[in-house]
Image 1: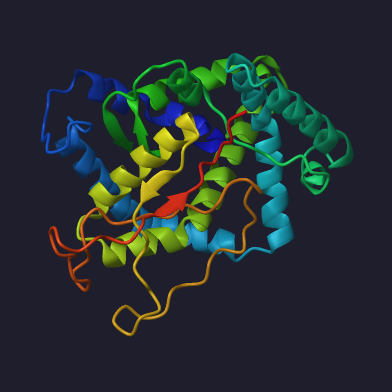
Image 2: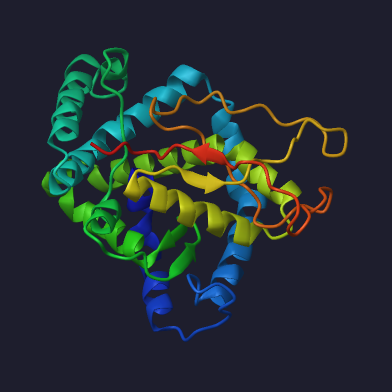
Length: 296
């Protein structure tokens, strides 16, 4: 969440353009701007294949301690936003735990480079003003795909901008503030890209419509984060089968202990997988995906 918030001001003009754009393709009611979103998704895919992906692979090849230290530092700077949103949602216990976590890591973790608190049963959890709005009853609004940010909605895009104002560190002035903030955004973005490598390959290789698959996963997962109920997302195809070849190993990057790696299920059967019978067969029970954020 924090890295997306940091990158969002770079593409605010796109959000404004989307707000005034007329309906394009509306095959899905949640995505009235589908035509524009698909074009932006195509641009992002090309950029990722030729520029961002290779850079992320280089970042993933860096020594794990260095990579973890950089990500821990950025996460520590973004955790005051989590505390504020926990308070706005009435999650007092989580807010207190996150406050202690910030103090412990800042004091004993070399300014947040080391995640000492996690080893002392104080794990990180994500929270944002978009989630706060959702728990207050606000709907997601139209789906958006924004290059360099990824899938979002009008509610979550607005929430990401609001998170900048909710972060107390926004009002602290220090030397090289912009350079440090930009560096943190890049590191967090690269880290997220490394984490999602296997899932991106799964979508690209097995889904007949990668754009719709990503949209479905994002909207279901975000709803699960807000309601606290597991999202019903179909199980991934077996990438170890002879038809598809062996799966790529998962990234060694550590994740927050309460944040499982994302699992994306295609919205339609892949070309190498037979579609289930329409009525008489009962589909397998979908794999439950635990939300990133536990409700109090």
